[in-house]
Amino acid sequence: QKEVEQNSGPLSVPEGAIASLNCTYSDRVSQSFFWYRQYSGKSPELIMSIYSNGDKEDGRFTAQLNKASQYVSLLIRDSQPSDSATYLCAVNIGGAGTYKYIFGTGTRLKVLA
Amino acid sequence: EPEVTQTPSHQVTQMGQEVILRCVPISNHLYFYWYRQILGQKVEFLVSFYNNEISEKSEIFDDQFSVERPDGSNFTLKIRSTKLEDSAMYFCASSDPGIAKNIQYFGAGTRLSVL
Image (tube, rainbow over all chains, first blue to last red; front, top):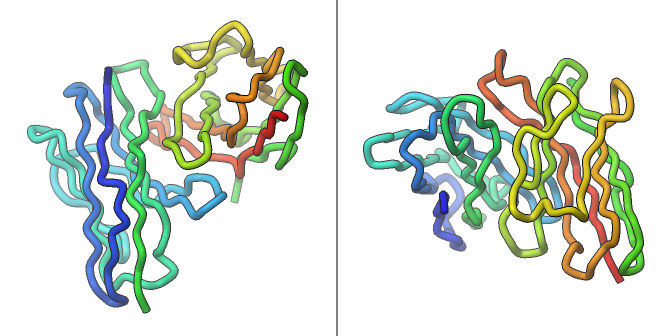
């Protein structure tokens, strides 16, 4: 069974701090990794995508990928109360021609004002 | 900005009834998906659709489920005989793997309540 694992949280950080969210996946051939934000009762909204080992930065967000360790993370700098949501790690499990996402359970982030 | 639209936003039905959930994917996308999320649980893949046929489906997507692209714009999910456990949010998504490395864009979802 191909899995994506996340700590469900809640992860509480003070406003202005860095929030660090982690995700591990089981399938070594996975090539594409995504972070989505989901507010309660709403649909997943894409935050970041990452495909190569290393860091990828977009504004206050940095995604980090380590394929050898099967680990992907998301850092949120200068956290704001509006960042309070559930962050979903999604992995495009499988090789070429396979496009479905497997989602983790999500990590609930609470940014305290 | 292009978006995936889903209708209705909320569907209430009686157990055993058929429901059809509708989606309009982003117009130049080629792959279409249905996911579901039971309240408090993870988002689960149901089915992907490409070139007018199912390309992948999960164990959840049994004979009670079917998908169709009845015209050039709509993509539907039909549940033939709903069960209580089908109550969930159903999300449609679309992507264009060739251009955007399979970034999937999600619609706002349809909340299905089976009574």
